[in-house]
Image 1 (cartoon, rainbow, N blue to C red):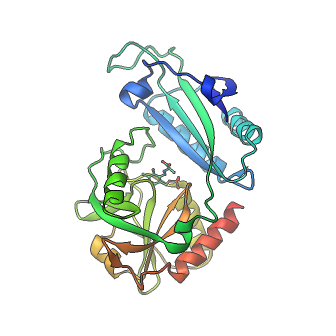
Image 2: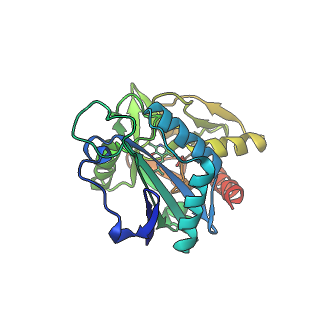
Image 3: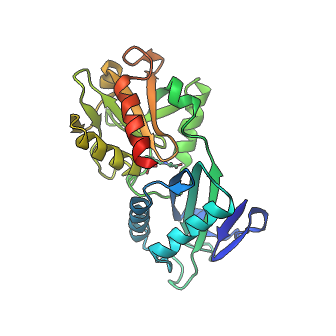
Length: 279
Ligand code: PDD
C-alpha cells in the first residue's frame, strides 16, 4: 500500500513515527474514517467538518485546508486503486519529550492517512445481522470527540467475542448510549425509528446524520431519545450505523431475539436507501 505521512506519499513499510509521538504515548490525537464506494468518498464534507470540530476540541491547528485534505484522500484512493473500503486519517500532537502539558504550538503535528479494503455491500453481517450484548459504558465523558483513545472499545469488542457475540451496546445510567464503534437504533412496534439524541455521551455519527435525513425525507416517524435495553428487547427491529458498516441489522440482544430474530424489513429498506444515497 501507498500511505500518506506528513506531506509525503510513501510505501507503508517506509512510514515511521517517533516513539515520542503523543498519539502513541497519550492517545493525544483524533481520527476520521470515511467510507469509499465505487472509488468515491461517501459524505466527505460532513467527515471533514467533524474532523475540524475534533481538532478544535483538542486545540490542534492543522496547516492543511479541506481542499488539500480531500486531495490527499483522493490521491490515496487512486494510488491504491481502492474501490470499496475506507480512508483512515489520524492527526496527533506530534513528537515531544514526555510531559502531560501540550508541547510548544510550533511542534509539527503527525498527519497520517491510509486506505483499507473492506467489502461492506456484501458483508455477511448485512445479511445475517449482528448478535449484540449489553455492557456498561465506562468511557470518559467526551465520547462526542473522535479521539484515538479507543481502548474501551477494544476491550468491549473482545468481551462480546468471548461471549460469542458480534458487538456490544454500551449502557450508562440505564440508557443505551451507542455501540462500541457505531450508533444504535431501534424501530418500535408502531414503526418509529429511535436513536439517542446527540450529547457529550456519544459520537455524532456521519452515517447516523445522513440516515436521519433520509428517514425524514421519506416521511418515516423519527424519535431522537434515549432508550433502555428493555426497550431493545421489545423492539420490532434494531440496527447500527457507521462508515464501516453503513447499516447492519441487529437480530439478538444478550442471546434473545429482537422481533422475530431476523433482519427487519424496515432496517433492510433503510439500508438500501442509505446505499443509494452513498453511491
Ligand atoms: N467508528 N460511535 C462510535 C463510538 C464510533 O467509533 C463510530 C465510528 C460511530 C459511527 O460514526 P460514523 O457513522 O461517522 O462512522 C459511532 C469508526 C468507523 C471506527 O472507529 O472505525
